[in-house]
Structure formats: structure tokens, C-alpha cells
Image 1 (spheres, rainbow, N blue to C red):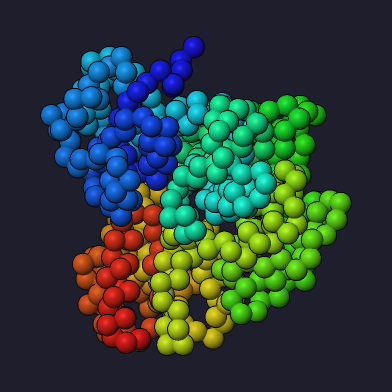
Image 2: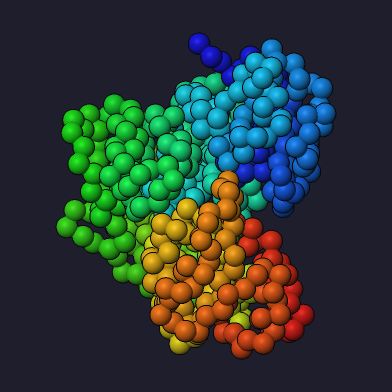
Length: 470
């Protein structure tokens, strides 16, 4: 049987990825030798370096530290986002190192825990981070591998407070279960959350039918007598689920909902509400207001906490202190003159939900959005849907596509979306032109959207407005 514990050194090809970096932090916490390569230096890679992890940014074999060239003691972890021509990855493959995908390694790690896996096209980062935060602030505690940076801990990896029983299966781990490349098939959770099954990753799945089949495979991997907590609108036709507890959640009371909220009140930047469970009601909880989408995510998180037996007072305290995730409806500036929000939305449905949430919170203000499309394939597949979502903005500034793992596609650019938009208050722009465009704009609410490198210009935009005394 393949065992992770026999490796003293772990090298990551693509260490700066949000999922890769969480695993790197895990192995580093286990006192392993950890290093890696990434194409670009980011705030995340800088944090990893500060923690003691060695990283280089040129794809050169001679930059790999010698300790990671002992194939008997070194495990190589890579992400599918790495190009096939990567020199370092090919060096390890040609020299017969043990080379594993990120998802495989995460699956192996999770075998030592009671796993809580959060899946779905939208909301999984927020829900998994919130679950982990609630559990860490309860008697239960947990480890966690997250798809975003928790603002409470400034990390995407949580470690249990009590590390005495490291190999005890009774310990919980919270994992964001990624559907890309069928990664979540490597997990066998005890509790799974399913938020949505909207079309996405059509470069991997031919159509929605194939996507749904992949989710069914994931659900069938839930352990016997385990729990599936799904949004009430998710309809999966799965046979032979007699040994599984299936419960539904929703924002408000619905015919088939087991968990939902009542008596919602928005006051002083918080949503106050009552949490309804199958057996009782927990009164007067509160969470920071980031639209009804975030409140719905909160219900999903509380559902898991309830099943695990987290006490009501622990839920209340954790929720009130939960600061959220970086780049998930993150306020950068919030005053009477300007609201500036940074958000990770990169799917048409996510854009629509976030814009709708902002409109509900600020019904009388005009919203200007800067959107950086993510992937040529996603832009091609969803150009019409992106245009429809962006039309909800008062003004849209579209930047060039962030290619990520893809090569450029012929005749695919942001102009595909731009030309389909009905709202004529729109601009096509390069990232380096954004500040000059903003100088001439009168803005009430500004939102930056995207999963690429749009976040790199966010501090510059923030400083521009601060220096302008807005």
C-alpha cells in the first residue's frame, strides 16, 4: 500500500495554487522538508516563504534543492494547471520519482480523518471555511484544506489546536471538494455538502449530463450511514441511497427543507436570524451581511455543525466573529462616499448572485463592475450568459481574458461577451489602463470580479481612491 508517511521531502510543482499551498502547509506542519516551483510570485507564495517553505519562480531543474532529488525519500505533487512541457515535472517523471496529482494526495491525507467535504459549483469556499471556523471554535475542532484565504487566520490551512493524537481517525478534516478534473472522486467523506450543479468546466465535462454523473459518483463515495446535506433545489436521481442520510437546506422555509432561516433582519451590517433544524430552533444568530447568498451559505454551514453536535452558544459566538474569506465579497473601502468590493466570481451565475446581493444591500446606488474573464474555454462556452449577468450592472469594464492553464483560442476574447451585452454603458480595457479609466469615472459602488490575476491591481485601485480622499 502506498503510504505518505515514508517520504521525508515533498516537492510541489505549482506550489502557489490555492489547493497546492494548503497541502504544502500541511506537510510543513508535519516537519517534512517542503519546497516548490511556481511561475509567478504572489502574496500567497510570499507568505509560504515567510513560513519557511523554499520556492523558486524559474522553471529550471538546477534550481531544485539537492535534498529533493533523492527519489526514495521525495514525493512530487503537481497540479493539472501545470503545462505538459514543464521542465521540472518532466525531470521527475523521466527519473522515476513518485509523482502524484494534488487531488490524489489530498485523498490519501483524508483517509486518516473523518472527512467533511463541501462540493458544488458555487459557495463551497465560503461554506467549507465557515464550517471549519465553527468547528475550531467548538469542542470538536478540526483540520481544514480550503480553497480561499480565511481572514480570521490569514491561511487556507487550519490545524487542530490539540495535536497529541495526530493519527487518530476520530479527528475531523474539512475539505473543499473540487469538481475540476474529477478531483473530488478521491474523497470518501462522512459528511458531504452539495450546493449546486450548474454547468461549468466544459473543458472536462462534455455537457451537464456528464457533470451530473460525476457528482453522482462523488455522492456514492459518501461512507455508509453518512450524511448528504444538499441545497433543496439540487435534484440528483440516485438509486440505492438507503444507507445515506439525505437532508436539504435553503435560505427560507420550503416544502422539502430540513434546515432554513426565519425572521431575517438586516441591522448594523449584520443579518440577524433564527436557525430552524429538524428538531428545534436556535434563536437570534447573526452573521456579517454580504447578501442573501452568504446567509444561505451560513445555513449550510450551520447544518453540518448541528449534525456534529456543536452547541448553540458555540455556533452563535463563532458566526459573529467570522470575518469571511479574502476575495469573497471582500470590502476594500466602505464609507459614505464609496463602496469598493473585491469578489472571486468567475461564473455567470456567481456574477448574477453577487450583483443581485449588492443591489439588495444598496438599492439606490449605481454599480460599476470590472470583470476579468477566466479561461478561453469558459468565455467561449458562456459568453451569452456572462453578457446577461453583466447587464445587471450600471456600468461594465471588461478586461482581457486570464488564460490560466489554457493556450489562446482563435476568435475567443472578451469582445465575445462585450458584443452580446445589451447595456451600452460598457468599456473594453487592458488591465494597465484601468486606473486611467477610473480617474474619469464618478463611482458610487465599484466591484472587481474574477478568478485570475485581477487581484494584483486591487491594491492599486484601493490606494488610488485612498489618495484621492474618497
